[in-house]
Image (cartoon, rainbow, N blue to C red; front, top):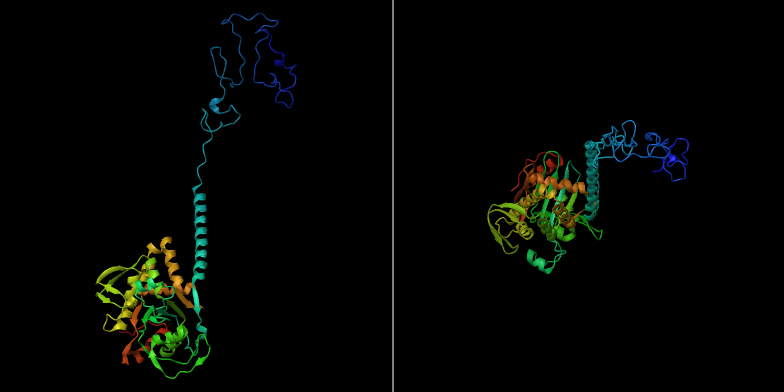
Amino acid sequence: MNDWPEGWSGDNRGNRYGGGSASAQPESARVMRQVRRPASGAYGGSGPSAPPYGQNVPQQPTYVDGQGYGGDQYGNDYDSGYNTGQVYGSPNGGGPGGGYQGEPRPRPNWRRRIKWTAITLVTVMVVTSVATYFWADSKLHRDVDLSTVIDRPAAGDGTNYLIVGSDSRAGLSSEQKKELHTGSAEGKRTDSMMILHVGDNGDTLISLPRDSNVTIPTYKGSTSGKTYQSTGRQTKLNAAYAEDGPTLLVRTVEANMGLHIDHYVEIGFAGFANIVDAVGGVTIDIDKGFKDKYSGADFKAGKQTLNGEQALAFVRTRHAFAASDLQRTKNQQKFLSALAHQVATPSTVLNPFKLYPTMSAGLDSLTVDKDMSLWDLASMFWAMKGVSGGDGTSMNMPISGSTGGNLVWDKAKVKTLVNELNNDQKVTVSGD
């Protein structure tokens, strides 16, 4: 056997591996201070020849300070440090697995996670709400200019909405007109008219019969801008709408009642049916069954869910009743209140697949005044829902008799009613 390489000596080590030298030589024993070299002559060289196998085996290189490969039968310590994870120089080992133990994983910071989750949810809700607002606002048809209405009464406390259901057939195909029993008459007429007063002392919904006897006042033409002087002509209330549209209707209501109208809202046949279908139908309890070939109504008594076509027939029917217009206005109030209640249920409001189609159908179908905001529209909607829930008053315009087939308002009661509305007082007047 050859002598122990000179590279192990402390004086003749040459270039050191890992010590900044470009040479690829291993480090010497002096550099690797933890390694012991065997006694001189143990493996030949100038010393005696190697002993036979198994006899006086020389001491093998070991690591000092207990950092070798653990002990053996010769007393050498060979503890490599695997138990302490120091093999690769890491004080606490190289991580889990592989036979050595790593540092414990830090506990998740749940407070931080909850905080950022809440921030994300709030951000999404704000962005969605803002986007929904601008989307809804862009769909409103602000086509009615109430600033052209002349000689208006002073505004009182609270807010007064004139809500009109017209028989407009715009957008309906011939097949739809047949299905909805709307007929094919040209132009628009008002099938229903209501005043909704929203105030601090309870909300009031007042139906104005379309056959109400009114005087057409002096008014300004909506398209011509020309002023038409009153001749004292008396006619049905819905004739004012047919003559010059929403602005003359508002002017006529204000002149005959003495009540200032703040906002105007109109919906046509198609829009009404679409809203009912979008919300999944409206459940209503019908006191007494009735049929009407003109509207297509065919209802039995009892609680039932009406689709758009059936709902339109229900609110339009008047030929089936003895007091035709008064009973129809009651049915209209009843159904609109039920519709408002249905739209406001959690199953609609919390379900985007139902809420957005309902909003879209309603907003596409509404015609409002130029000053109407989404806030005003929401206030009107919630007031109608409140009336249906018993938080307000629902009534017909007080009637004292009739003339020429038209219904005559009770002037004394109307005066008291208007005074209470203007002062935002609880209504004490009742109608038929």
